Image (cartoon, rainbow, N blue to C red; front, side, top):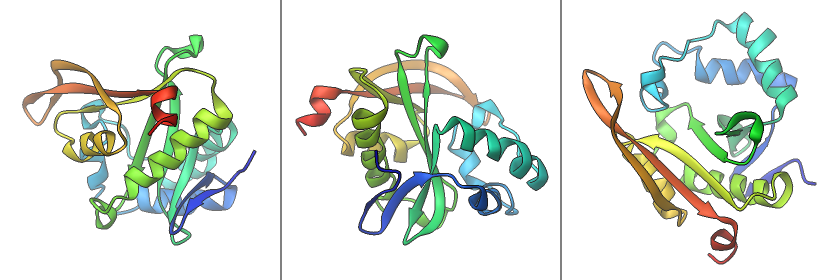
Length: 183
């Protein structure tokens, strides 16, 4: 099994100990973390201090191996991840992606990185017939990624995500293994 996957300038690979400070710096160490406005902002996830991230959160990411770093020209710009939407049953695999700096948004990087990630997951991690992701109706960019990847809009739960004094829809995209292989 390969542990680094790349397509020209974009790559994904497991997190290493020496990556933790760089990940913290781009994710939480900036004055403005605009990525948090798009990555499930209604959950109000914490902004980690460097010590907590490097000594605890980062180690958990390394040990679980469910989050990898995303690179552009070998520079860390984000992460890709997976989790099971049904917990310990492990029959409902969901993916995620986060590019932490807005300079890299809207350039097709997320689409290519998720393509590499889904290929890897179907080939090496799971025998499940389905992989999907969930976003919200305010995140038009992520909805476009799903469409560009040929994923199917499988569900829309209306007005269940509350953010900035407004209700938004929860949006679910997915793809079956045979659909992915026949793209």
